[in-house]
Length: 59
Image 1 (tube, rainbow, N blue to C red):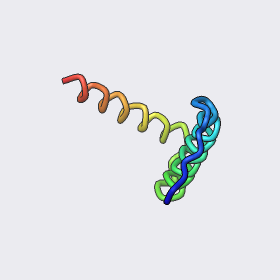
Image 2: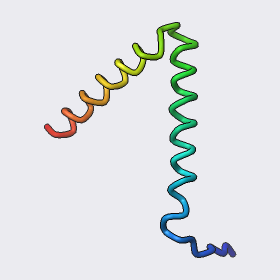
Image 3: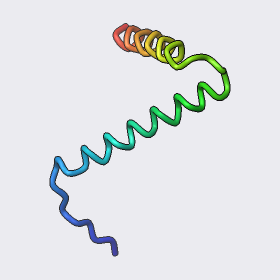
């Protein structure tokens, strides 16, 4: 039997924020490690990909 403890709604957001930052840091490091591109170029590519995804979602 699994017991679930009640958690305040806002208590998880800081934890999720830390994981999001770590995830982005790790993906940035791996992108740099495999492509040897500078971080600002990787961010530019990710921004373009995000914009394209958003446009495709609207269609």
